[in-house]
Length: 400
Image (cartoon, rainbow, N blue to C red; front, side, top):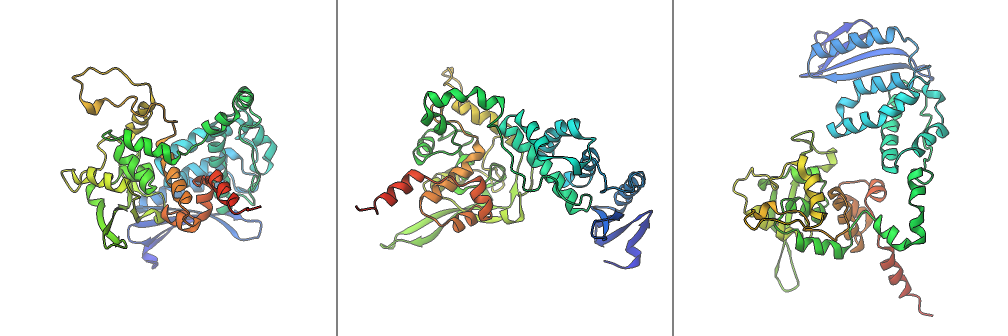
């Protein structure tokens, strides 16, 4: 809808109903380096919220008419929190706020264009590697958004490689492990399981509250939040093909279309490409179907455990076995069932599935499609090839 009755001028900007029930507020604030206008815009569900936002931005920008030509990190982060952050998942919002707080406290009053790579690297050197990586993700997202919306001419940290942990005091404290057992140190840091470890877990996790979620992650490559959102009606078992003897080959399929997180009861999937029908590997699919088929209602969730409690339960599986009173219900006896297996987060079972598929010889492009990722994302975050197996295969070709 674009007629005049749906458009209203509001100070230095405008509010427009561009489709039924959706209002876009837009305001111009100076020009970019190429001479084109800088504009900020945001979509709202009603006209009142759009006009309120526009009035607030008009007052703010009037006191800062040269925004973009001297904007501080504090100002940029404030705009990002107001305009972009609410559109992200609740978990991402919480993480970004936590990680950006020390950065803004340290250099918030500094002009963004004067921020240097060395300055940020020194800040990361004092953080744990995992914290430094998350901080860089939040900072990069803020700077990229500023460039995309014309608030910055360039991202001062664009394509600047950072080192996480190698020069920090945490890495120095653990340096002696290389003189004790370097193989154990490297193997202990791996974040995926081998096929043997998956098989051991398959036998020992049977009947535990998180078994169904684990089966979805390691057997179908689902994200944890996608698995928690599944209901009985989202699962089916079909005849996919026949073998050379005419026997039926059954496959369990999952209809993935929503996610359930700790902060949000139910929300859309991470990306639009995540909505798909996903097949499970065997024997995970057959066991999963046994669990689902026993559920009473079509709307019954595949896991009765709350998503907010999954991390505590998963860690308990790896703790030392506890003493239980013989009259305690089996459903409460969860501690220690996976004791002895290397602990990795439940979320890394998606990457474990990727490695299993890769080791089976599936093309990387097909592997990426199975996980609803681009090939670049797949290689960066999920693929962990078995290079020893590859070396053996190549060695067999070297006959001299």
